[in-house]
Length: 393
Image (cartoon, rainbow, N blue to C red; front, top):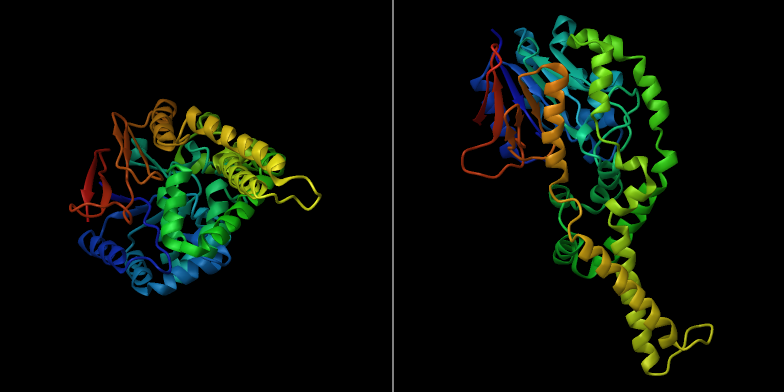
């Protein structure tokens, strides 16, 4: 019976840690015949400042030993399956898969051993269900996993428009922190450039909000996706009705609502803080007799503006300091139970949140790249009889 290695959130990119790559290659050497399942965000395509196909080629070109190892396995008939995540949804598009096979260097019959799925993969005769899990996280949920064109979720939009241009990649893994803690991190890293960095963030965030709501094509994408249900279901052994039920369990994307996107990006607190600071500055200037350009005493404008900003900020924080802490992890737990109920899977394997969560029917891979600890880099081993065990490289 075939054994599969499920590796989550490898996040291989052109500036990936050499130790991550070394651990990955060592695991492949130790498990030469196991089916390799890279369960989402394996190539950090969204973090590269170029087209998805170019990003795939750049990443694997930076680490040719990875492509060589996968090609060598394919030549022996050993399969590698990429499960699309929100950072690498492009790997499961026709162009992305072609770029992937080309960058790995497989030809002829070996190409079939390098494959990708846009949604999920069933192992051990359907006893184990593997997908990335972002579909249950509102901030990472796509319009539909089978939509022909991957859309940027709220996090990917910020990654491409803000994180990558300013080089703030460390913020990706702490995005659930409160705005104050994130601001502290920015102050420590950028010092005098902090106002410029914040202005860049606001511009990117507002651009994200403008692309949300009615400009986020959920209805169109879902209609196109329905035409692909039968083909995908035949591949994974599920009927279209079951796939419809699975999709109904997914989260509504944050990008479906301009208001939700605005709040998720904490723009309410950003603008409240700006009002507080600007109002305080005007009030201070008014105390020494300065006026605004239109002749109104600065203190007359400053005090109400500062008060409004302070009240709005206080109300937001009192309601809940960190509005989104733990939301994605809880959503994946519930999503795993829903998948198990709908499909009859004994174990559901997800990733996405970089946390080694577990439940009666749920295993999270954690992140191979970003999980600290002395045990090593985590992955899951899936046996042909459906047994799932956690291991470390």
